[in-house]
Amino acid sequence: MGPSSCRKTSSGLPLILHYGEIKQILENELQIPVSKMLLKGWKTGDVEDSTVLKSLHLPKNNSLYVLTPDLPPPSSSSHAGPFSALQESLNQNFMLIITHREVQREYNLNFSGSSTIQEVKRNVYDLTSIPVRHQLWEGWPTSATDDSMCLAESGLSYPCHRLTVGRRSSPAQTREQSEEQSTDVHMVSDSDGDDFEDASEFGVDDGEVFGMASSALRKSPMMPENAENEGDALLQFTAEFSSRYGDCHPVFFIGSLEATFQEAFYVKARDRKLLAVYLHHDESVLTNVFCSQMLCAESIVSYLSQNFITWAWDLTKDANRARFLTMCNRHFGSVVAQTIRTQKTDQFPLFLIIMGKRSSNEVLNVIQGNTTVDELMMRLMAAMEIFTAQQQEDIKDEDEREARENVKREQDEAYRLSLEADRAKREAHEREMAEQFRLEQIRKEQEEEREAIRLSLEQALPPEPKEENAEPVSKLRIRTPSGEFLERRFLASNKLQIVFDFVASKGFPWDEFKLLSTFPRRDVTQLDPNKSLLEVKLFPQETLFLEAKE
Image 1 (tube, rainbow, N blue to C red):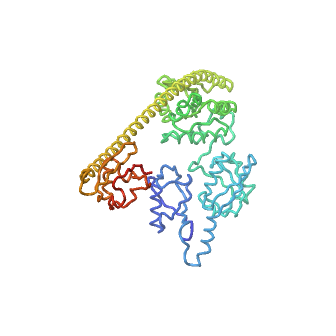
Image 2 (cartoon, rainbow, N blue to C red):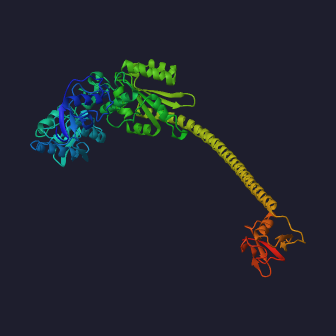
């Protein structure tokens, strides 16, 4: 296969397969590494390798395309041309200028060449709210016959291509438009496996407005039976509701009833809202009138949007009815569940107004379908008054509680800071004491060492000669820095070092003190310690003084 080549493949596959397993099968068949392979054409958009086919709710037949954008081009020059052109198209961006016919609005959308026609239609659905199955197109090339085709191979003009989209209103109108504009291909999209159209997309007579034969005309249910989760069921409900009654309708919360409670009740008091639960029933004669005339009225839609979280459920199917009654019994109690259970079909639809309280959820009002816009608005406003009064109390309680908590937090913080300050002081004192102890130990060790040296020097001194001695004697008088005098006799032949040792033995080591003479003034510690006293002229007597070195 050439660079970024696109191959259409088909085979019957079990629904329990994962997307990644399909790629493994294609790798064995096409000899293309899984890492180099892209599968395009899924009607649900791109999927993950772990996605199970069954969860995609695919139609029976699907067309997929294998893209290989990372494979090197073949060496044969004979095939380089077509594949190079396809590679170039897949890498190009197509500007689609799409005109929405009903509102005469133009959209300029950029798509890569590897995007599928189905992806374009889904993007247009997001912009125009026209479901894919109800889109009526003009301007697609005749070669664009399959929604799963890549734009690169659909025959679009590059770099820009003009298209027009509108909402299909009736089969007859679609046929007339097809006959009038036979030169263009009109692509009416499928509904992802849904072969039926909504009766509300076409004109309805007076009998249908009041519910007669409505179930016979509506082929698509509002909600799937036995949906795996409530979010998926609400997605279909919203899409079907828009299809039948238009886009001006309450915004239905997509998620479980528990998630709706979290959104409406379990937030700060100022942000809480009432919960409106709409219970739909297709078999009721009141349903069409209530939905189209009351529920979709702009005043009701606006009021609900500002003050309520709206959630919906369809009770047409027995399984869905039983499922909701179970939820109702769990969240609202058996009395409310019994009230709904005893409602007759023609009393539907119902509108439950629910207010969240501290310990339970209270149903303020059950509004039946046989009402008017004014009455519905009055009952909504009455519920809002009750809710506002309760909300103000809750806000006051919440503010007081937060104030108490803030005071407590401030006290706790002040206490914590006080503890930290005390601990810091204690640790600083402990460090100071430890440092003092260490310095004291060093001082003691130094004193002990100096004392040991002093004693050693004192013991090593020669004995002091007597005044009357056969050898010449030198008498030295040494003044200390404190004013005291040290006196001792030395033999004139004694070395000067003995004098230094004598002075050191008295606590004045010669490396810390200078020994000075007066006449002439000189630093004796600078003289040669190995010379005798006679040689350094400290004979027969001399007065010296000690001075600390700088």
